[in-house]
Amino acid sequence: MTQIDLSGKTALVTGAAGGLGAAIAAGLHANGATVALLDRDARANTATAAALGDRATPVHADLADLDQLRTAFAEATERLDGVDILVNNAAVAPMRTLWDIEPEEWDTVFAINVRAAFFLSRMAAEGMRARGCGRIINIASLAGQKARPTGAHYGASKAALTAMTRAFATELAADGVTANAVAPGMIDTPLVHSIGEEKEAELTAEIPVGRIAEPNEIADLVSFLAADTGAFINGATYDINGGVLMR
Image (cartoon, rainbow, N blue to C red; front, side):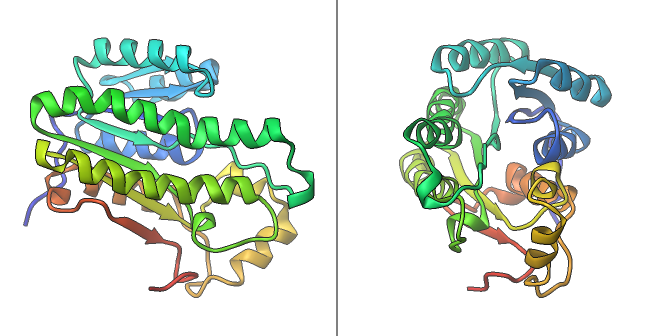
């Protein structure tokens, strides 16, 4: 059996200051990777990286700003001496009805959830192709597969992310680079809890396994895909939602 061993590998995780991103960064780090945590919340990001200790470094940027994104990627690449694993986790998820979504908010959601992931993936892919190996892992969502009465822009952005994953998987496979997506459902994070206890209870009741996911359960899947265990997996979207969507 191949073990999950990321020793000697480098990883860049976006939206890593807290919640799922912090769990993913911690999982990669625990499996041996050197990790750069990218987030716009400099204070929280620095604290999260410090808690991981050696082999963890914070990098700060607003992912909606392409200039900041390019600068942050260059900084991460220099500190890590290259990026072997990229996890596009950062996202914003405002929950509004169709009638309440303004153009500016629509653009912001797509800038962070899709555009940043595209350009970071393209930047990372250059070095990965040169080394003949790399992993791009995009954190999608059940919301991109199953309609809800609010958050059309969030759901659309996550559906776009899975389509983009397949495009990268197709173009980069011959160079030894894989691209996959992970689509979680409800997770025990501040983002999920922000919807309110009543709504959270209502959505939890729809989950066949009877609970929401722990962040480390998603992180374990990401580490699996990032390691040699995921070498033959490419262009896939992994559902991890407790059975809300079965296919």
